[in-house]
Amino acid sequence: GDRVIGIEDGYEGLIEGRYRELDINDTRGILRIGGTILGSSNRTDPTDYTGPGETEPRDRSSEAFATLEKVGAEALIVVGGDGTMLLTHQFAKGRIPVVGIPKTIDNDVHGTDYAIGFQTCITTVTDALDKLHTTAESHHRIVLLEVMGRSAGWVALFAGIAGGADIILIPERAYSIEQILDKVRQREARGSHFTIGVIAEGSAA
Image 1 (cartoon, one colour):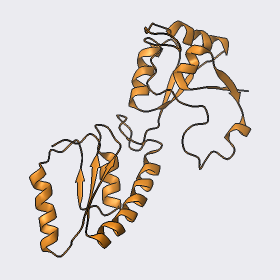
Image 2 (cartoon, one colour):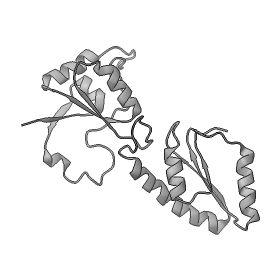
Image 3 (cartoon, rainbow, N blue to C red):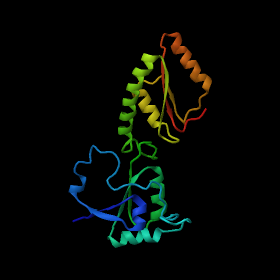
Image 4 (cartoon, helix red, strand yellow):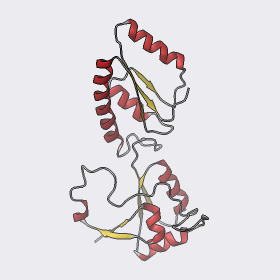
């Protein structure tokens, strides 16, 4: 039958030869756990890698391919975001079949409706907004919640709508400070003495 080999810490483990065989027992109980049981190195580039104790990057892709050959890999399944997918495309260059599985709370992988992790992130942010809403309303505060997403506003948009935010700022739409102040003034004029705003980290006036 087929064998599944898990590479520890992504491309870092592939370069350094850290891997282990996985079976059904490795997946028990992980459904409701965030993160990854194998670890992650996030944007490690095999063609431009600086290892432990090294000061200058160098091309280590041959070592990564050597690990794949050592374990007898017939395909490489990569789980990650847009950066990981781009690196995989550059790294593989047709030498081995590759399957990319989009997993990023930013939800910014081109051609993907919903990446793994996005819905969990929306649920978490919406829960935070529910709690902040109570505080803001009770104490007549303006509360701004910054969320992840880099240059994509999916998290801010979806969570802001689900959490009933009054202001949502995303990188894809320009805004001015005066527009925000106008919104706060309008709410005050209607008797709402609090405002909840959700801001994507890549937003800029």
